[in-house]
Image (cartoon, rainbow, N blue to C red; front, side, top):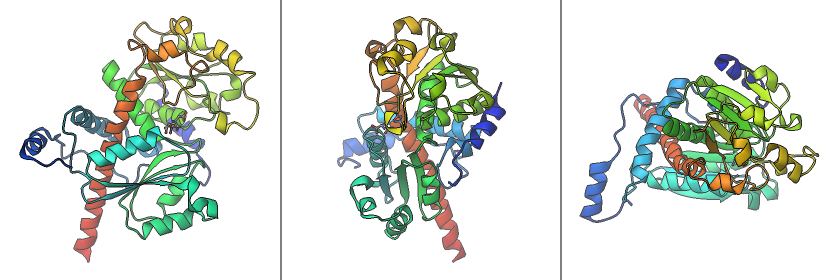
Length: 358
Ligand code: ASP
Ligand code: ASP
C-alpha cells in the first residue's frame, strides 16, 4: 500500500513559499440533544492549513466529531454553543458560493458571530497587499479566519501574521482540506470504512487542490488511489506519488469502490489542455456505460460546481442510487463545524495559558 510514499511525494509538490431560540420548549430540546464530545478529541495544530499536517488519528477525530454534528444538523433545533462569543471572518479572495455558505452556516450553528468579506471587490483592488489586509483584520481581534485565495501558499503566509486560528478554504492548486475531510466523511458513512478502498480520482488532476488534499488523506488512511485523466491534465511527477496513473477512464474505473469526478478547471488553465469539451466528454466524461466498469456498488462523487455534460452526465449526477453529491454538501457543514470547534478549543486553551502566565 502506497501510504507513506503518497504522503512524501505529494509533499514535495507543495508550493515553494509559499439563537439559540428563545422559549422553554426549544431550550429543553437543545439541552437534551446536545452532541456529546469526548475529552480526547483534539488537534495538535493551531490552524487547519492542509491535510498534509494531519495525523491519521486526527483525521479520525475530526470525522468522529463531524458525525455528531451530522446528527445535530438533522434536528429541528440546530444550535450549539461551541463558538459562542467568538468572531469568525470568512475572507474569500476568489469567488465561492458553496464553500462560503457552508462555513457561514457551520459558524452560525455553533453560535459564532460570522462576517463575510468579499475581497475581490474591496481593498485588494485598491492595491492593498495580503499582509496589509491580514494586519488590519488582526487588529479587530477575530478568532477564526476562513481564507480562500487563488495563490498556493497564500493562506499559510497569512496564518503566520495573525493571532487567530486560520482555516484554509482552498489556496490555488495546493490544498482544500475541508473538502477532503467532507469527502472522507461521505465515503466512511456510505462504505462503512475509510481503508482498503479503491478510489478513482478522475479528470483535471493537474489544476485541482481537491485532488491533492484527497490524495494525501486517502493515502494516509491506506487506500488504493488511481488518478485518471488525459496526460495533459496529469501533474508532472504523478507516477512517482505511489498512486496508479491511468489515461483511459474505462481502465481507471475497473473495480473502483469510489469514483471521484473533478471539475474541468477552465479558469486555472492557461493553454489548450483538451481538444474540445465534446471530445473530453466522449473520452473522460462519466456516463452510465463507463460507470459499468466500476464495482456495482461504487459511489459517484463530485466536489461541485459541476459541468454537466463535460465531466459528468447529468443523469448519473442525479441518480440517487449512485451519486452521493448531495450528501457531500451536507457533510461539508458538519465537517466545518467539527474543524472550527476543535480549533476553538485550542484557542481557548492557549489563551487560558497566557492568562495564567500573566
Ligand atoms: N468553487 C465552488 C463555489 O464556490 C465550490 C467551492 O467553493 O468549493 O461555488
Ligand atoms: N470547489 C472546489 C474548489 O474550490 C472544486 C472546484 O472548484 O472545482 O477547489
